[in-house]
Length: 431
Image 1 (cartoon, rainbow, N blue to C red):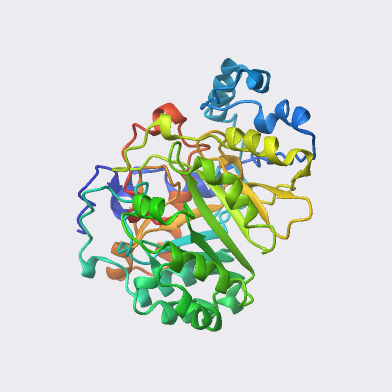
Image 2: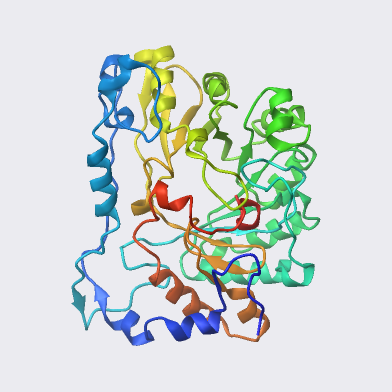
């Protein structure tokens, strides 16, 4: 039997997992009715005074030490009540004659058409929020997915309705066969795959950009947490900010469908740079995304380091006023989008910690060792690589995937609990 992942007690081999969960007939015949959750679609364009009373800036677990902004905060008890409601199980009505739920649908009406695949645990940076200071013990090479195994799993997911795949790591560009892997995914387009994207730290990206585009890569998310070379070295424990900035500029010239810049914001480190990153959207069609600092094993997360998106937004209103425009929420959104009037690009906030978007979640993850993770913050995994190597058929793998997704929770735990739960380091999950 494939050995469990050793650094936490959360791994469940696939066959054991299937033996412990609901019988197949329960999933296939007892179909919940009217469980689809519609995300809200709020948007605004307001003056600073109006913005302070808007729900987007009304409350945050973190605080700004400015008494003039107190009226922008909502009552904390209301937040707690909302959190409790999110974690209540719905009243489920069962229909014994209804058709089976799609493989990639869970019991809360969410269809998972977005697959994130970590292609390596290796990285050429040592970012504070991603990797423990002491490093990690890498999984042995023969226990990681090969290119052929990644392509097979991707084909199975696409056959069931996945139309977007993102490659993550570690750092995907350190994988020697990354171009072959993207070419293999590109061949899945006739089956329904529409988008192939990649998240990268950009260090070794620039020279590979033309080949990546020709291989079939549609879009890029490039991580850059500071524009200051000194702070870059503090964040990543390596040098190289110039290489990342050059890669961002070059990517914008090569016709990618999108180029996004990911910024993890940490109090006292780079929260003062938020306006400078917004200014990057002035002339270039970039999408800058400010990510709330999230807890993972070994990253020394603390709430005092967390900068809630409302705090960032309030500070931006002080600078830009009613030139800030709210963009409509996209389907299955992860970011709350904004733009500055007259600017070419846009910016947004990924608010996993202060305003979760679980109801719109359409993502599942396969990590480099072949484990399926249906929630970023969940600590249950299902070993798909074990099935691949034991000779399981596509149908058996599809059934395992379906059972795992049917057990996905309505929402992840709250901020106070989340930081205490065991999870992998981010570098082993895939950014």
